[in-house]
Image 1 (cartoon, rainbow, N blue to C red):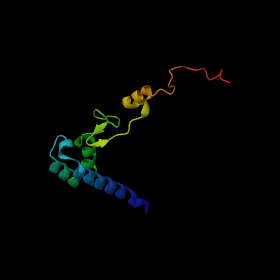
Image 2: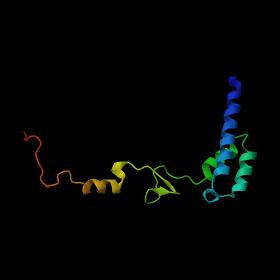
Image 3: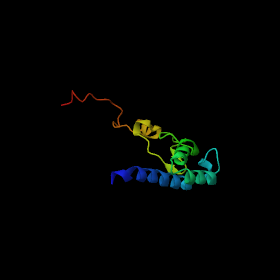
Image 4: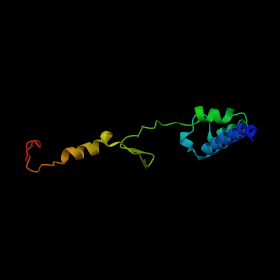
Length: 110
């Protein structure tokens, strides 16, 4: 059973690269047309040259933290940590827990 593992791993990478090429929008494909990338992945997938070339150079990769402006990238909202979100920090400044404006020392209250 263990002797089939390399073949199954190559097959899994091959299938994953093929599906990734098909699902990638045309505007995110680099260097060659999408149809050529499909052919390269199919022809050279058995020796992993096609999938490795696709993963290395064929697709535009975006950094995980890159949000593309106001927290939106390609129509999807991305999660932003509260301490990195300027709108959240502004809302904290707008809130005033003491309505009268006095600051009290909580240690001397009794």
